[in-house]
Amino acid sequence: MALFQFNSSDCILEGVDRTTFQAEGITERQIQQALVKSISCLLPESLVVCDERGFWEDASRRVDILCLDRNGDLVVVELKRDETAAQADLQALRYAAMISTMSFGQIADEHAKFLSKSIGRLVDTTEAAEALSEFLGWEDSDDDAEINQSVRIVLAATDFSKELTTTALWLNDQGIAIECVRMLPYKYKGAVLVDFHRVIPVPNSDEFRTKLREKALESEIRRNNRDYTKYVLGDDDSKLAKRNLALKILQTWVQQHSPQTLKQLHEAFPITYESRPSFVATLSEAQRVAQTKAGNRHFSEESERLMIGGDQYCVSNQWGKDSIAPLIQDARNIGFQVTESE
Image 1 (cartoon, rainbow, N blue to C red):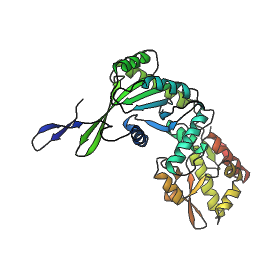
Image 2: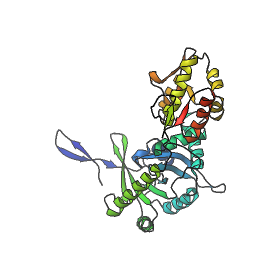
Image 3: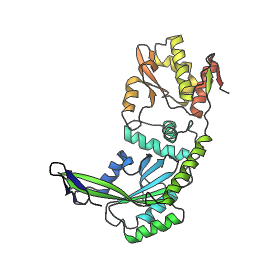
Image 4: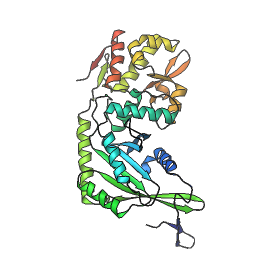
C-alpha cells in the first residue's frame, strides 16, 4: 500500500516516496535495536524477554528477538532487511525448536540478563521472574510455573517471496502459528518512516479471530489456576494481596521501632534479607528504576515510603508466593499475626 501526505491547504494527497533500509544506511542490527525499544510497533501486548541470544551451546545462530505475549506464548521474531527474506522461515523454525522446552525459570534467567544490560544495573532472576509474572497477570513467580508449550513465529521483512508466503500459509494450516509482517520504509522531509503491515494471517479472517478467542480462553483458564491468596494482618479485617501485605508489615515495624539505619531493618527481617537483599531501595534508586523499561517496581508514593534515620526508602511492589514466604516467617518471628484469608 502507498503512503500519502494530506495537503489541507490544497486538499490534495501527495505521495510519499518509498526507500529501502539499505539506501538509508540502516542495518539489520539497527532495526533490531529499534524494535527492542518499541516492540509494540510489531507485536502489541508483548514483552521482550531477550535479544540476540543463542540457546544451544553448539549453535552459531542467534534469535533476533524473543518475546512473551499476554497468553504466555513465547514469540520468536526473525528480522530480514532484504526484499525476499530468503530462508527466514527455516531459521525461525530452528529457533522455535530451540526455545520450545524452556521453563519459566530459564526464561527468567534470560530476562534478567537482558534487563541488566538494558537498565545498567544487576537484575537477579527473582526480580526478572516477578516482572514476567506481573506482565502475565500472575500473582506469583515460581520457577515451576508453566509457560505455554506453543511458540509463535513472526517474520519481519521489507517483502516476502511467493515461496515463503506459501510455506507460511501451509505451516499455519498445520497448527504452527507463523506471521509475516512487512516493514515498508518511506522517506519524508529527511526522515525515514516505517509502515508495519501484517500479510499473514489476514487480521479479519474467521480463522484468525477463532484462534484469538481460543488463546484468550486458554489464558483465562491459566489465570484462574494461579495463587491469589489474600492475607489478614493482626486484627485488621482487610484482605491484603502479597505486595500490600509486605508494605503493611514493613511500614508497621518502622513506625513501631523508628530505626536509624537500614541495617536495623535487615536485622529484624533476616530471612527476607538473605533471600532477597533488594526488598527495599532508596527513593532515588526506586525513581531511577521507574524511568527505565522495567517501570515502577516500588511503592514510591509519599505516603508509602519508609523513613529510616532521616532517609526515605521504598518497599518493592514485586512479591510472589516464594518471595513473600520469608517475610511472613520473619514477621511471625517478631510478633506479627499473619493469617491467610478464608
